[in-house]
Length: 318
Image 1 (spheres, one colour):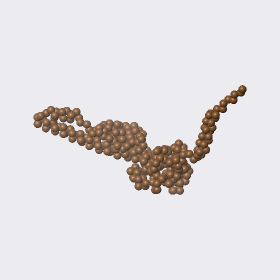
Image 2: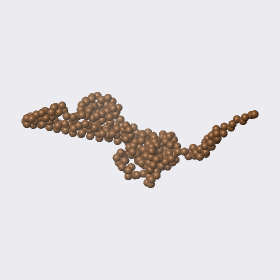
Image 3: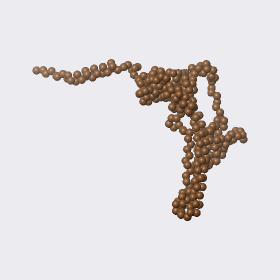
Image 4: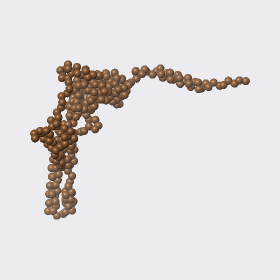
C-alpha cells in the first residue's frame, strides 16, 4: 500500500498571505516622486547655490520670519524693528550664498552667508568689571571697631573706614567708566562683524512643517516673494550693469593705521601694524590696561588696550 505524503497546507497558506500583503503594500504606496523629500534633499538642492534677495535683511540670526500660511506672509513692522536694532547685513538685490537649510519642528531655516550674527560662539559687547574688594586694612579696622569701646578711638577708626570705603567707590567709578568705553568700542567692532555675517529666512508654520514644504517646489513657493533662486555669476553682473552699478574687482580696503577701528583685539591690531615697539602694562582698578606704541613707515601709533580691546588710539607723523 502506498501512503501519500501529507500536504503542508498551513505553510503554503502562510506564504500566500505574505505574498498578498506585500502586493497590497506595493500597490498602495505612492510613487517615489510624491514622497516628501525632507531636509537632506532640500540641503542638496539649495546649499551652495546663490540667490538674490528682494528686501533688506537684519544683521542678526533672528533674520526674517516668513509665514506662508498667512496673509500677509511677513510682519514688516517686526522686520523694521530688527533692522533698527541690528542694522543691515544683506541689502536688497544682493546676491548671496545659501549656506545652510535646517528643518525644525515647526519651521525651516534658510540661512544666507553664514546665517547671521548671534549664534553660539559669537561675542557680546559687554566688558564686565567687578566691584573693588575691601582691603585687609579695612577688614581689620572693622574688627577693631567691634572690640573697641572708647568713643574717641571708635571715632578715629570709623573715619579711616569711611576714607577707605570712599576710595573703593572712586575706584569703582573709574573702573565703570573705562569698562563702558571698552564695551562701546567692542560693540562697534561687533557691528562691523555682524554686517559681514549674513542673515536668514525663518519659514514658520502653525503646526509641524507640512509635507508640501519639505519638497523643493514647496520651499521655493514659500520664499518666492522674497528670493530669486539659482542666480548665476553672469546673471549677477548683468543685473548690476542694468542697475548702473560698476562691475569689476572690488576696491582694495584701507591698510595699516588707516584700517584701525575701536573694538579690535590686540591680535587684530598687531596683524595690521606688526609687533609694538613699546608695551607699558598696568591696571586701572581691576582692569588690565596696556599702552602700546607702534612705529611704521612715517607714522607712530599710540594705542590704549583695555582687557584686550582697543579703546583709543592716536596716529602721528614721526
